[in-house]
Image 1 (cartoon, rainbow, N blue to C red):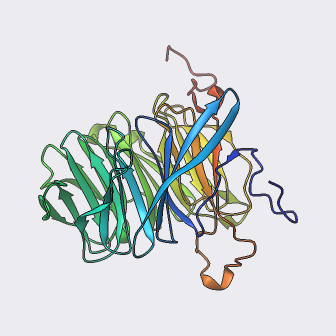
Image 2 (image 1 turned 90 degrees about the horizontal axis):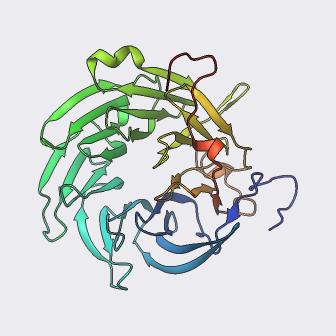
Length: 346
């Protein structure tokens, strides 16, 4: 689709998802079993598309949608790919048995908006993080939480790779939980980044985590005290003196490299082990608030829309359209490589 003027929302020639949400997109989540993509948005909707790949052509078909009473902020799938969970400003989580065509039902409640959600298959529990400064664990067959964990402040980010869970809150707290003993904090540290936490991602090997901030920077953190010398931070999503938020961190499910996406409208692929950027993509004309890989890493979905970082006065409905794009990562973009000049075998 052509765009008016010089603003280009799709400089990377990605595939556009049809019938995108009518307001800014807050989360993207692929089914762990098939190419079904769910998006939540500020128009109170949870939408699902079926993504079909035919050779080099990718088609998207809208399948179904449900409504919340207020903007939706987060989503996740059950590990069997049958069910979607979504939460947001109406302070509740809806469980949507999407594949069976069933009606959504409320399975979790908080006293403030729900910012983060994760399904933990090893525990058969849902976990929710809220601005009410609690983390709650839910058996979806019961109306009350199995456990409520007090957080030091509002939950801003969460990532689970059992038994590791990392939660980022306001005031730059990072709380690490060992889910084999979820009622006790395993470790609490202050973020290595000087500004507000926007996103976190547990390492695939559960030995550490990434943290991204509003100040165009990512921290690579290891859990083991003996590995602290391996910790480092790096700058990204900056353009000269302009500094943008890092909004999303996604590990590739096969190669364990990772993607960052930011309010500069760019997404990049990185290899933390060799400390290299594998690929820098062209900047879109609007921010990227969220992104995700599909289950085998052959698709990377990202949203391009206004992120409200400059308030309502900078929102122009005529130019602020909402897009979801699908990028097909080349192996060279997402497969790690030894650092040039490194000795020894990798």
